[in-house]
Amino acid sequence: MREELIATLHENKVALYRVALSYVHTEAEALDIVQATAEKALRQVGQVQEPRYLKTWLFRILINTAIDVQRKQARRNEIGDELLEFMPALTTLAPEMRLALNEAVADLGAKEQAIIRLHFFEDQTFADIALTLELSENTVKTTYYRSLKKLEAALNGGM
Image 1: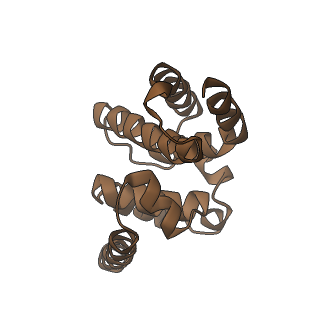
Image 2: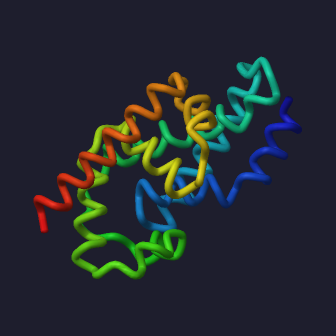
């Protein structure tokens, strides 16, 4: 199982980095999160029963690690250039709109942030997100659409 995990880590290293970066916004912190995720996964690889769930298990560890790091940090007021490289659509937004969007996402709950980030930044399907977060697909969809409404309200009310 260890070999399968190492292969899964290599196959998904860019995606893991992008998700981590969407949480912390700096390259160094994102790399630290990916490294901590790999270490935790290697220590706990024996807990995985089915190799086909390695990817979702790995992303779950990453998200939990990123949330832990995020809780320890002071809230950031500006979006980093590194994040914009992975979100080309945001580069066309005015800086104040990018800032407002970043703040609106940061104001969402942890589960809502994870769903929005996995769907937008990683193009994951609702089914994949449900596996990663151990939620039903309907819960993911409901939370996603509710989060979009919250973001819209925050952006329309704040601008």
